[in-house]
Length: 387
Image (cartoon, rainbow, N blue to C red):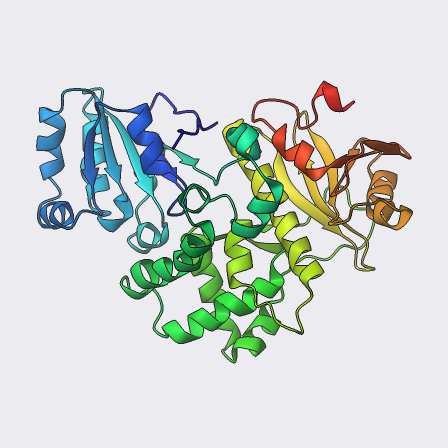
């Protein structure tokens, strides 16, 4: 299978590489650092050896042929970070690359992520532009863009087992939650909040657990990097805005695998949530890989007027609405028009499932697939060919 060239660029100094399982961290590291010394903590014998004696890392570093040391899944033995800290401080010139698919254990043990001596980076699912001609919008909406899943021979079967893998190996074996059944129900219940304002009390009622339990479960998802939240854009607010963030699973395929689909569940609603989540995960990757200073928000007034995404930064100010529709009508532009009344400095963009590029009342409307295929980190969110 042809190797995909990722947009992620390695820093020259030591760094943490966060990312959910299956996002391609290990594959990328083998490509980038073929001669590095590797400490793979997923291997049982390696885990046992370093658990018993973390200081063994000094011997590995001393015997390495090069100056790059990779520790895969470092959260499994947080005590290794004390040794890493010493080796960085002694001026021997080692570069440490520390992968991590869960921040839970690092937080629990009070690790300070090397006090800034290693920067924090994140590996995201594939971006459409990374896949080039092999990218399919329909396929990414069905099975997502997690490399482990998207590049498998049977993406749907792999996707079905992906969440089970997390439940078994990350949640149950690590003892993160006491009641695995309640947590499984929560994963399904919170899928109804994907792309929506998060109402914790409502999720708690659906799961028949306490609100505090749901707060803890949400923190687990965040720590396992399986979800993210988008805050409200409130700078110089001229209207009454809601205060709750929007919730998203980190990948559209993971969302679809957890979202129930039965006679009472609207396929259009599920497709719309998957599309909005797909745009969200691309915007996060575009920010992270391009070292952008901008941040991702959404905008919603208490009267219900909403814009799905706001990109705001030093040289970036975009209001973006996503519609799972093949046609554009004036009602779809209501939120963008209202936002531009309050923020005339912003540029407005509507992404939809049609095929034409349109300009309506100074609002650019372009097909989702074209937008995703041309979204490249380090470049403007809209290139000249769209204008």
